[in-house]
Image (cartoon, rainbow over all chains, first blue to last red; front, side, top):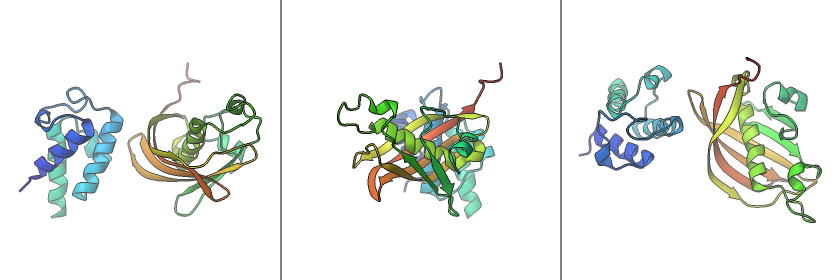
Length: 81
Length: 143
């Protein structure tokens, strides 16, 4: 069964047009994966829709790496349980 | 809101201010109008003897209407396109036409806004699309 990280990795790879293999937790969204601010906003929109959560501006402002993104998604999914 | 009132929010000015009137309804949908007089600069060569409003200008008309959705956030800011998606041109717009735009805000985070818009003339759809913008500080008078 696909984990939350597996699903998120697929969305990140598709949105940023990189291979899933490149999407590892330590990768910086801007510096390593080539994202710009619009890419990240669109990615957050997709993730909110797919995981049925709504991220706060404060939390998203702190997201720099793929690992930060995974942690934030898991935190919000935990909140809804 | 008339053209003078619109100028209090939009940073655009003639000849690129492309909204004559607008109102926001209770569902936060922007309804705006632009009357194509036939004297506009963009009709001069597009095309001689057959003036048609260029597609990029129709996108700009929609974009300015979308920007008015966040009119209170526009004060002290300039609007910059970040994306134009799924735009389809269905019918042309000509001198004498009134372009009517219906714009809605789809998503907003930080200074990025994603909107959808439809431009019609006389109830007939001419253009539809999804437009996104960034609002950046207007530093023109701060030197």
